[in-house]
Length: 233
Ligand code: 21W
Image (tube, rainbow, N blue to C red; front, side):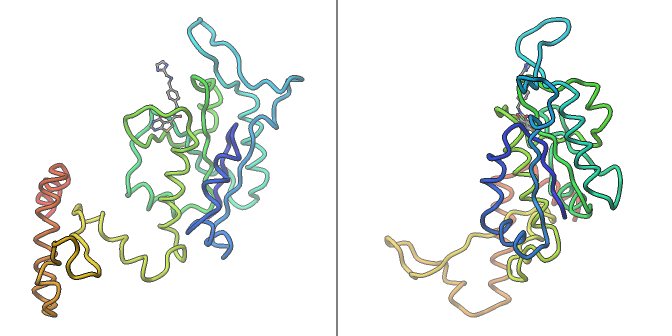
């Protein structure tokens, strides 16, 4: 999987994605993360990439030309499949979900377009964007953090990124249930004991207890998921 991120703040994205699991996967050659600074593609002598909105209104807009030329630079680089999927990270997009992470993880190349200011000239979006995606209903200062969230989540769905041990966890969200509580040593901490069943060695009883906890926790904390679980059963 090759991620290509079109942004005005490349160092922000690079800082966040070169560590931990994503960093390890890059070293292993399973993933690559490339940032493209949209400002490098401006034709303006003062390196300007924004301008006022036609029709008036507050704020500035990113101009079409630098965004389009940055995109063409990526397309020329990936000789394999032309027309990669281009994800515009925007509060106006469809909400990112685990299912989308799995679907995007099947692509060879993914281009992320991060907006700033009040947005981007609509004409370049019509020309290059294939998917409009948000990470939820709250307001961020730019698209970079949202792109990083999506890249992190997509990456762990790419075969080989997680170890076998880590991969076990991928099931947990797909059946619409939250996980049971976890305990480690010591057996008593500030007077609180580990549930006796976990010390019993009865694997069947432990499994039953965990399932029960999982259901109850989901019902209380995420009634929306609980309803989904019941209707899929
Ligand atoms: C926030 C850009 C607000 C544009 C009405 C008039 C990408 C994001 C973003 C941002 C506006 C995502 C306004 C969840 C997010 C992102 C920056 C609109 C304000 N409203 N997912 N003017 N939340 N956010 N301008 O903010 O780019 S994915």
